[in-house]
Length: 459
Image 1 (tube, one colour):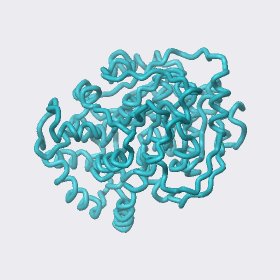
Image 2 (image 1 turned 60 degrees about the vertical axis):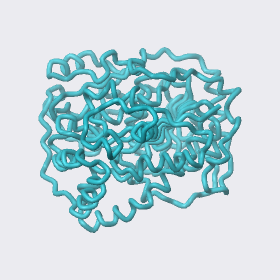
Image 3 (image 1 turned 135 degrees about the vertical axis):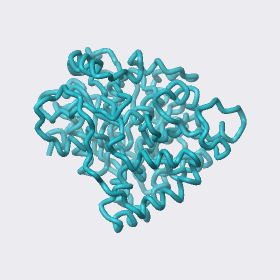
């Protein structure tokens, strides 16, 4: 077990776990384990092998894997209706792992000049040309809030978790007040840099070395989009509600210097994985600002009401990429049965997040599935229950400027198979884009699946 997983005060010299006193919710670890955001860095961290060279780009060689027929049959039935003409090409990509592309996110807390030169020499280019979240146009710019004045006000009672027996806890509030009195740290300039290649090439992973920071993190580049949508600014308090294995938490720390980043993960094994990831990429000087929490995500709406400026809900979901390669037909059938129960959990997590964010704050909900019932339907259901929650259209802000790299679903059946276009205000397609945008894997743009939706809590 990583030394970062020891339970201790959060201002010690290792990553802290903040413990909360809440009554137990119905355990859903079997569903929590469906959390799908396992990228190549995460898989390789578990199965690292010695390599003669760590700077030579290599072709992605994947052992032949057989798809799970029950899962594929369900996907064919559902996605042919939801995606129309986009599904055959998406299906072909999902069934061809050697075609999958991977990004290389650089670690600003480590020396990366030589790695950058190697990437460029091998034909990699930056996903964000100026390596800054602010390069994307955004109609609504968030500002650092006065948390002392705003937190806790006007709690979304309509959006409170269904479990009424939870008891509030003030641990995080005390932590936030302590952070506000800390002197500012001397940190490298925030810069979210991710290199991608037009072909399925990847850098080899770096082995975990205690005491030494890794220089880069391998990931599906589409997983950066929810972080871009979150628009974290320096000095903000951020909650990563379903944080393991930690890729999006790392991306948040590359692009900004938040006053607090609470990385929550209820499952013990995944939490250990998360702590090891943080230990591998973040310096000890951030130990009091980046903390690990073991809470059930559904409890934050009451125990942490109105605390955070930004909340990311990278929800447990039916991971299309991994579920398609279930170990057996029996496991595939079991996962399909579990799938029907996921939207209820996802909605609970999203409601909890909307209560945990301050008035005027932002929540981003994301999954890595193509399933409409876990994406648009979850968002729409929660919005109907939460009159103080307002969705924000990400089409012009993210989909249009990044359409060179990612294939986005037009979202409306009437536009099946057509290329990216600007939706007309007021029609059904525009409404669907307000609920969220969906990255669909396509030939040459094999990123995704990735759904993201941004919701602002009205003041």
